Image (cartoon, rainbow, N blue to C red; front, side, top):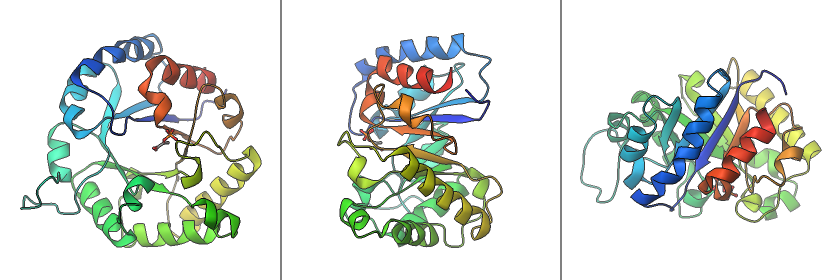
Length: 251
Ligand code: PEP
C-alpha cells in the first residue's frame, strides 16, 4: 500500500440510537493500535441526534466527527427543524457532508448547496462535497457534463479550497451494490482532479469515492490509485465491516 493519505468517511445516514455507540469501541481500539498510521483519517458522520455523543466518545482517539447536512443560514433564525454550521462547530465537529444525492433528490439545488458550503467554511467546518450522475445521465454519456455543472455551481466564489474534500458518488451506485469499473472510476477521478487543479485553482485536490463500498469490493476499488479515500454508507454502520474495509485498503 502507498503512504498516501486515506480518508474513510462513515455516513451513518438515518441510523443509530445512543446504544449504538458501544459498537464504536472496536473502531476506537483499531485506531489506537494503528496510532502511527498518521495518513489514515477516520471521520464519522452520524445523524444530528448523535453528534455530541460521538464527539465525546471519540475524545483522545484521533477519530473525527461530522454532520450529514447543515442549513445555508449562518445565523440563528426561525426555520424549524434546521441546524446551522455554527451549531455543528460548537459541538466540536470538524466536518459536514453537503450535496448528498439523497438531499438533491429532495429538491436541494446547486445554489443552495453553494450557500451551505460557504456557510460551513466560514464556520471552520471542513466540507465533504458530494457530486455524481444518475443512471440516466450515465447512459446518455452526460457524466462529465453533470459533474462540471455541479462543481462549477457548488464551488462558485468559494475560497478555502484546502478545506474541501470532493466525494464522487454516482447516484446509481448508492445503496444498490453496483460500483463503477476501476478503469471508468480512474478516468472520472482524474477528470475531476484536473478540473479542480486547472479551473478551480485547488492546489492539492482530494477526491473520495462513495457508493456501495463493502469488504467484498474494496480489494478491487483500492486499485484506483488516484483516489484519496472512501465515503462508506451502509457498510460503515457495522464496525467490523468498516474496519475490514480500512484494513483491506490501507494496511
Ligand atoms: C452514501 O450514502 O453516501 C453511501 C455511500 O451509501 P452506500 O455506501 O450505502 O451506498
